Image (cartoon, rainbow, N blue to C red; front, side):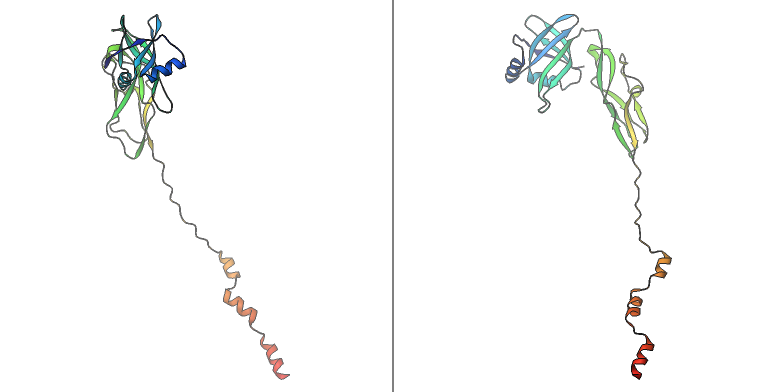
Length: 222
């Protein structure tokens, strides 16, 4: 379980303009709340915060002038175009308490390569000690055949970690590939009756141009 200390400063200015100025100066506006305490508005250095958030469910010790708050990231806002941090909500936690968090699921093992692997859910919710949150959980796909699924109940949980998600929730599914349809070329054929009724091109020409024999003899006698 990763735990990082970051020195913060209390915010005295609020609003969109103040938030833009804070980000321009290299700080991210943040709110710390929880455990019945009054929300605290602080600013955290964007570089250090960005590094900390690369770890899932990282514990952040926010060091203020008068005290330190142990917190867990609750909600992170980013610019939809640039992906840069804009704001973060941090919830206060206490050592020894249990929390419900969403933990990423990694997969391992050989499966049927004739299937198409679909990651239906990339994480599951678990309850665990706040200082013992797993960075990720493992799910074995060993021997998985096309048409089969692996569920939340199949994810290996460390000791002391309790599954909160529905045990029947699909995590990965191995779809069956669609059968390829072979197209048979269609050959145009003339029906036998039509072929017999239709004269050949040469025969049609001869019939149309050849003079009757009787008419030729009459012309000679004249």
